[in-house]
Structures are given as structure tokens and as C-alpha cells.
Length: 255
Image (cartoon, rainbow, N blue to C red; front, side):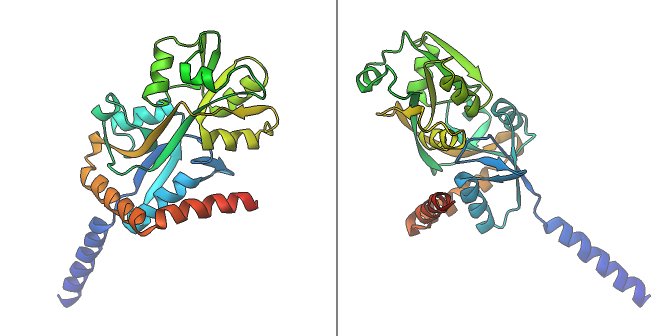
């Protein structure tokens, strides 16, 4: 009888431990160097480092999967994934995702052209692009100003590709006049493809846009979203947020 009672206690404790074990959070993102990049099947990047750090503080296990952006958004909308980053906030996306209040990154959205190309600062300020063809990554939002320029046909034509690398190669081959990208992302792609002498990032940026992490409404993570916000705010207040970013890019320069 005593042995049966002990067995019952052990089984009860084991079920309790399983119940208290946190489910791994499925997070999706896109290939977006230097924020997110995959090398030898390992997902890394400054945004990955930041997100992993925050969730480690929250003691929340996570799995990050890189997908084509359109599929990643579909996973969040359907509840097949729990969270997504780095994502720009739009009214349409807020219908199916809870966005963090705290900003993950402030991103300059810039145009890139061939070195010594025809577009200058005055044309950027005047939005004089009617004679220019543009490459964008399919289903990526580039912020309100750039999205409006694309949607209102301010460019001669818009070519959509599945990655920033494809856009950079199209531009270097002379198949488009311009490519739009996050500035840090463009610098990373240009360097990795050996195009630093061929392509230039134009100034001023089209827009400085805020990017976030967002959680699937289907999976009801509003409380976790609030906890993530609080931890990220603490990091900004104590300076560790900025130190993490500085350390990441300092390490890249040493490679």
C-alpha cells in the first residue's frame, strides 16, 4: 500500500512538472541581414540576438524560423506561429496581430542605385521617380511614405522579388534603376555580395520607420506581449539595449 502511495505521488509530481513546463514559442521572421540572417542553418543577427535576450530574461523558450515574408505573415494570421519580428505596424496587420508598444528598431528606409547613378537628394525630396524602375521584396512594407509611393504608381514600374539579395543583383545587372531597403540591411547585403564599389545608398532616407515584434491574436499572447514590452523598456532605461546593439556591430567589424 505504501509503495502504491509513493508511486501515485511520483506520477502526480511528474504531471505537475509537465504542466508547469512552458511551451516553446514559435517565432517566424524573414531573411533580413544584418537583423536576421541564416548561416549553416543557424539563425543569427542583431534582431535575433535582442529577441533571444529578452525571452531568456522572461524564461520563455523560443524557436525562431526564417520563412518567406508572405508565408510568415500568413502563419501569424492563422495562428500557426506565435510571434513575428521585425515587422512594421499597419492597420491591416493590427487586425490579426498584437504589436509591442516598445520599438525593437528605428530603421532608415533608403533607396539604392548604381554608383554615380542619376538620382540625387533633390529628386528624393521631390519624389521624382516617374522614369525609374524599382525592386522591392514581395509583401514587405517599407513604411507609410514608401508604400504610398509604390501604391500610387510614382515609379515607372515595380519589380517584386523574394529576397533583398535578388534585388541587389538585379540592380547591379542594370535590370532596375533603384532598390529600396532598410539601410543596415542594404549595407550587409551589398558587402556580402561584394558590390560595395558598384552600389550606393542614397541620402536622405525616404523615411525612418519603427519596427516591432507582434504576437498572433489567434493564440492569445497579449499578456506575454506586455511582459516583453516591460523587459525591453527596462533594457532601454538601463542602457543594455544600446550596449547589445553596439557590441553586435563591433563584433561584425572584427570579422
